[in-house]
Amino acid sequence: MIRPALEARAREEGFAAIGIAAPAAMRPAGDRLREWVAEGYHGEMGWMAERIAWRSDASALWPEARSVIMLVENYGPDGDPLATLTRSDRATISVYARNRDYHDRIKKRLKRLARWIVEETGEDVKVFVDTAPVMEKPLAALAGLGWQGKHTNLVSRDVGSWAFLGAIFTTLDLPKDTPHDDRCGSCRACLDICPTAAFPTPYRLDARRCISYLTIEHKGPIPLEFRAAMGNRIYGCDDCLAVCPWNKFASEAQDSAYHARESLRAPALADLLALDDAAFRTLFTASPVKRIGRARFLRNALIAAGNSGDMALAAPVRALLDDTEPLVRGTAIWALSRLVSAREFASLAREDDDATVRREWQEALPDYSGR
View 1: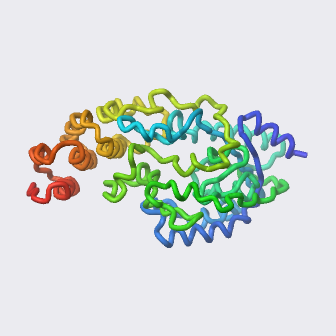
View 2: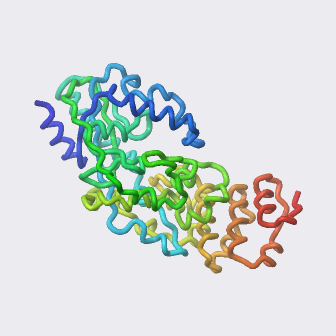
View 3: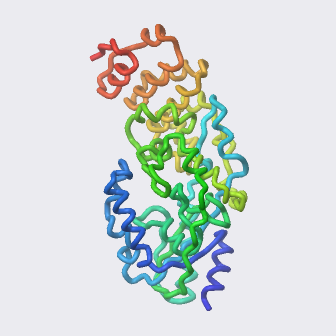
C-alpha cells in the first residue's frame, strides 16, 4: 500500500497532517465561491474572479488528476499573538509574516514529496501553494484535515487555526478520506472579536472590511471608517484565528523559519516610519511583507501611529508629509491630524498636485484650498 509510506514520507518532510480528496468533490464549494464573488465580497482581488471555472472545480484545473493530496504545516506562535495590540508605540504583524515567506518553504517540501511519488509510482504530479486557482481550504476539509470555521479558515484538531496548506494533484488513484464534521457548534468567538465586523454571517467573510485584506490586498487609501479599528495592526490580522477554542490542540511551530524574528515580533513604529525603500527591502528580506511595497507598508504604519495617541510619533509622521509617494503623504495627513493640536496641524497644510492627497487635507481641514 502506497498510503502508509506516503504518510511516513510527509511526516519526514515536516508536515503535521495529510489527507486525500477527490478533485470533483469540491464543486459545491465552487458554487459558494461564485455567490461570494457575485456579491462583491472579494473587493479588489480580481484574481478571485479570474479563471473562476478552474478555481471552483479542481477537476477542471487538471482533468487527468484522480486525487488531491492535501498537507498541513503548523505555524503555531510561541506566545500570545495578540499581546502587542496593547502596545500603542509598537506594530503588530500577523504571525505568519514575522519571519520567512511560507510559500517557498512549503513548495520545496511539496516538490520533494511529489518527486518521491513519481519515483515510487510513475504517476504524474503537480504542486500548488496558494499561487494557483486552487481552493485549498475546501479541499483540506474534504480530505478530512479539519473544517472551515465560522471565520472561513481551516480549523484542525492537530494545529488549531495555525495551518499552512499545500496541495499535490496526481494521476495516482488513492483512497479518499472522509470529510471532517463541522465542530464550531454555537461558538461565536471569531465573529465577535472582529474589529471591523467583517463577517456578515457565520462562514462568510466580506473581505472589503477585513483588516488582513485592507492592509495587504487593498492598494489605495484605507477607508476612513476602518482606520481607527485597525489599531496597530500593520500587516494582517490574527484576532479571529487567535481566539478559536480549538487552539488548545495547537503547538509551537517546529520549523524555526516560522518563529518570529525579534525585529518583527513587536517593532517600534518610530523605526518603521523612518524606513526608506532600501531599508524596507533589507528589513523584510524573504518576508511576505515585502510584496506590498514600502508605500502600502508605510500607509499601514501611519494609521497605527495616528491611532497610538503618542505625541513622540508626530515628528516622524510630519517628515512623511513630503514623501515622494502620494499614498504615504495622504495617510500622514490623517495620522498627524490625530497627534497634534488643531492650530499646529493647520499650520502644516501645503499644496499638493495629487487629488487623493488634497482630499485628505480637505477632510481634515474643511477650509483647505490647496490646488
